[in-house]
Image (cartoon, rainbow, N blue to C red):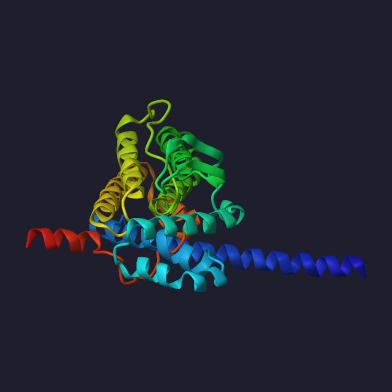
Length: 301
């Protein structure tokens, strides 16, 4: 009786596995592997940033009672209206608490999420105090950990040879795209959190060119942290940061594409594909402030 039960369970498990594998291969070999063009990257990055900064924290993570109690403040941010210094401080404290309460949940999706305790206590922060007390996801460190893994994956892809080279390139391409996405998921939230000023890394990045782009992007996100939310200075800093992230996406696509063959590309997927366990970018919501391409058009008129 027991043996028959296990045989049925094994058959069912095998059937489900076979269906899952078939579905994966159908998806992989029918999905596009074309690299995204620069204007597509800009649109996708804007939507990823909007999802990380607003959609997830405001609608999925925040406690419902707290959202109701702070509906006016949250609605002001979402509408794109400029917050006063006092409102920006109150919003960042609310946002920080929301992320703190969801820290363990968020860590399930990113192994590089880096929790720091009482960071920079002697330094001026952006809410009229000093430091970041308590245990918190330190976005600078988390994004740098993701970037370090991205560089490691690119090196592995570019040096992989031999019989196992194909498996290495597929696996590391997925890892590169996963960590690439996680960078902006961390830093998209950063302008809305309590923090201290930008600090240079302890040592130079091994890839100096890509490392310089990353640090310029991080520094721009940090500048946005010290501007009133949705102010002109805030928008300019966020746009500058996202422009830098666009460049990192384009460079990563190019370097992965140069090393992977057609079948490898299909099995690895492209940036934001299901294969790299990347989230779907938020729907093209009404922006809090002009999208970057819209802002550029405005400047050229």
